[in-house]
Image (cartoon, rainbow, N blue to C red; front, side, top):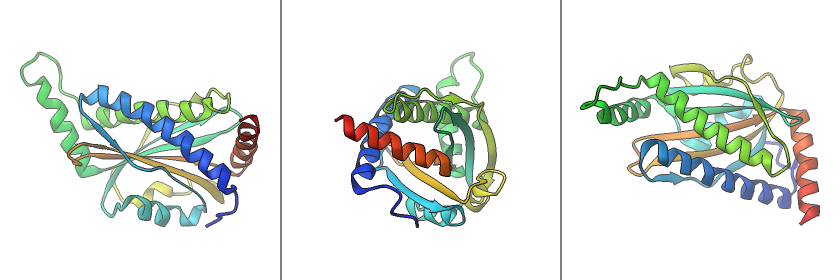
Length: 207
């Protein structure tokens, strides 16, 4: 791992910013599902892309098939946000949500629609909140489905992450009973990592 990209003070600041972003995203997710949302401690590290899958596996404990959505964002700090869920958990969440439609005329929600809703909430809240701390407003590309019931290794193929180095900022959100957990992974390339380094310096100097 490339641990020396950020100073300890910068890393602490980035984790505090991630905590703030997580709180906003959890509030929106709780409203979406009308349930309490548990949050993890955010993980931040800079890795070579060939290490990304193993690092993420160690962070998340995922060792089964996943459903994943990607969404790009850009300002002068660019990146990709990936929302990754265990496929079994998506099925449970879909059944839980659709129970509310059983006695109504509303159509049920498909698993794909549901994971897109989760991804939009998490990506929009977290990325916007993080970049807002640096006076940036991101522009988002439309979300795309990377796959359903795929291996975690398939998430980090060269057509997804075409960088030699990537910042991994991982946070996860779970329903209170732990039956569903979503992992948000924010990836940034080398140029954006350098700009983030400068933005963190400017923020710390302003305090």
